Image (tube, rainbow, N blue to C red):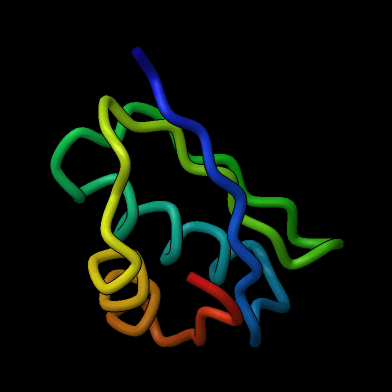
Length: 70
């Protein structure tokens, strides 16, 4: 069963930000879909199983942004 969770990401301001965050989160094991809403600063991730908060935080950090919650 798919798991969907929405996170708030700080620092995204443009389409390049969206691409960077989408790329890093998409590389996490089990992730099937990543939707970024630039206006609200949220990222919705759908995966095969729950993702660890640390894995999500690390992916967002790798993209150069900050996860507000995990």
